[in-house]
Image (tube, rainbow, N blue to C red):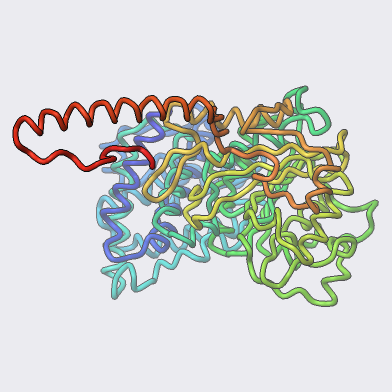
Length: 554
């Protein structure tokens, strides 16, 4: 598998989506297409494991013989021939793979029904989705396909039309996938590529479920380094990682990618939007994260409605080695007197009703372990706004919790054009200063979205520069600077990045005496040239130029 394969497959599937969705909007079609890719992934993974488990008992019939038998898959043949062994086999598969899928609901069976335009495809899909939600996994994935409405009028006005549309979609996906190697990682990366493409088509809604990979890489690179001394390099293990606004889960997966699958204990995410919550659960499984290795909660992190996080006893509190987040920017919320007493906010005060940015920050920070690192994406306003936000910012600074402030360019997100910043926070910092990195000028303009870096070739280097500047606390003129808390206090705890690291080029010093001397020389040359020119004009009988013509100054 190569990067080119990932991009080619992603583009192939996106072209299929673009051609088939017709008048259906991108968000609606996304749910169908990504669900089918998820089914294909689960099926391939399951059939491969089943084939290895059954060994010589696997039917392995040639395709033409299989079709003549009337069975839609090799697996169906084995189920029909070995009814007495099914229960024991499924118990083994649950133990080894953590899930089972019955033959009629495997992708190979569904794709064959689509190829032959089978009238029962829609009903079979409905039964298959219910089976996966309620029976496939021991832990249960209830509601996983709750937002995939196979009876929607958007697919057709009646059952035959909807069935025909589903046949067309699935057949085209099957044909597109057939051109590429059967690689589970390839399908997972293609899934994430499509999420990005659908995000581009969703405009401002994209902020609900997608963090651009470049920014994900920066946050992941930061939180996976040793928290006390990043210069020591990557931590050996992160036992628990938390994203309280996880969207489709791509940020959590990026942290896992940085650490390697054995470097992560468990991933935790919370997501308020039901559709996005289901996308996140699928995305985890598609990237080989077992159901026991992640936990995604459907809920509102501002209300803290996840039971495992509601423990007020500090001795029993759940803590995370790394917290990452890209919450909605300046979200309006409803702070109440009761919320003001909440253990997350009571020592800091409440974020204003007009912008929940600091409420999100304090939520994540509360659950950060003593030796952990938190990296959160926020709008620039949190750095300098007054009122209750200044009070929260001041306490975090005085307590030594703000480690690094990173300024990024505008238009990096599909959901907003404003410039954003990354705040890095810690509970046990070694120094009482703050590192400022001003990366706002380093970007490549794009039509819909800017890219970090000054060009395609240097983008990876630029991302690495941001992380390495943080890692070694490196200072560079017009780029980064370590600022003492005293200087920040002199600036009234304002963290506006340009106050500490200006990207303006210094103006060249002007030697006025030298300039005056040169101007005098030019003036003399002009006078001489004008006098000579007038002599020629006089010989030709033409009136001379007026006195003072061409003078630089009077």
